[in-house]
Length: 136
Picture (cartoon, rainbow, N blue to C red):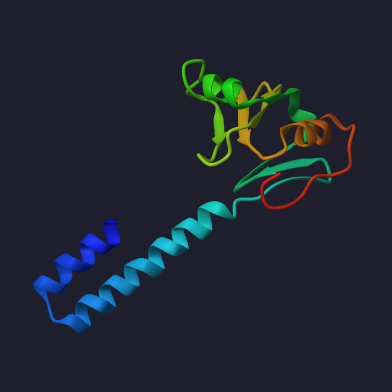
């Protein structure tokens, strides 16, 4: 609806060809943002957890806890620590909380949203093969 409203404002304020061109550009930019956000990757490969642009060696990880929707909401909200690393997406309700044991890192934990929290937790615990893909 935002793009439709902008198109209407553009049509009233400028020539039709410019309004359509500008609106088309905004549609492409919006689609690009959604594709970029939706294509974030989470993977465990070669002893490293990759979560979007961040990565950490699994030997620096402590306890791993798969969380359901309610637990995720609490850890992401009222029980959140401002120093935590978050890779959360609003369309994924479950997550994995990964505690860090690196004394040089002030980050207490990573909260990574995923469609498959138990599988990711198992991969991080070393009891499953490597997990890779779009949004495990």
